[in-house]
Length: 384
Image 1 (cartoon, rainbow, N blue to C red):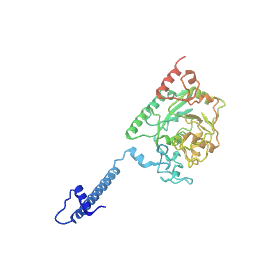
Image 2 (cartoon, rainbow, N blue to C red):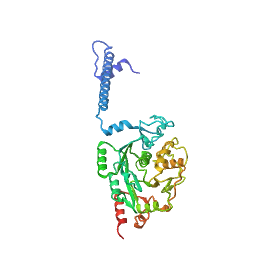
Image 3 (cartoon, one colour):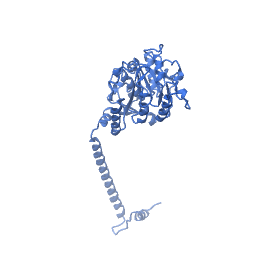
Image 4 (spheres, rainbow, N blue to C red):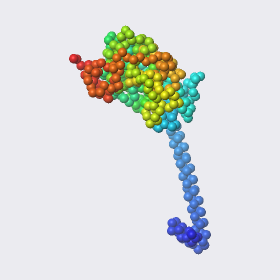
């Protein structure tokens, strides 16, 4: 049991207070005074902190506008699934979505915001080459690539992307990128564009989870800038592309000229519902347990009447983050079935250990690095 005297001894030991001649009530009275003083200091500190934060916010708001900052502030809000981990939630969509009668309103707290964000009318081109198809190319190769992957672009420019005519048919190669990581990177990209005239840039945030947007922007560019081309190909930046074999396929008399798309076919693929997977798709975005037949996104070729039709179908197909399966869903909506290539072995995921004769036969296969593409291309093209 603690007595008043015990309390007085503790206060004397801890706070340096001593009994005075004023009597036994002196210590408690001083305790009240000190407590009030501490509260006053705390309140003053909080006022100072609030004033500092307000001043800091005003300074941030007053930062000078650059082109890049204007684009970011004008067009983008970060949207994510509330229940998924960070690397599965990053969708960046414009906050100026054009409404249509069937469109879900944009709300940053509802998963329905993802509806229609992939439709290309929500975006515009920052860098463009609208006259590239004035020479009526037979085949246009569209390469989605990250803005910072200059080595990949240069490797393609020095290999299959340097082929302007194959078997007497004009071929064009263009790179499609989204927004860069900052003003300095944007400046470098613009310089690269001036040098090579083969870059197309749109104002979506360039990320793995925005590949559906990237693919739909490619389709929109083909439909609006290059409808006169006969065929087009979406091909990833880490691919070897055998243009001689591809052109032989396209020039074959039995190759359709319309409603045609071929590549590495994917049948009966289940939708991944594991939230720890990079291929996770929420049921709200795609409720079916399996995808329709689609073509692996590494590289597929199609008649150039399809881009406009796919863009139109995307108005009613809710977008999800598996870009190649999404194109398959648009094709299903159109009633168009992907075709198996005459020789399926020409569209290969991996070839394994390098053998020159294998690369002489393929149309597409995945490589490990830009330097590997350069080395293999040199060997394939050497005189025999």
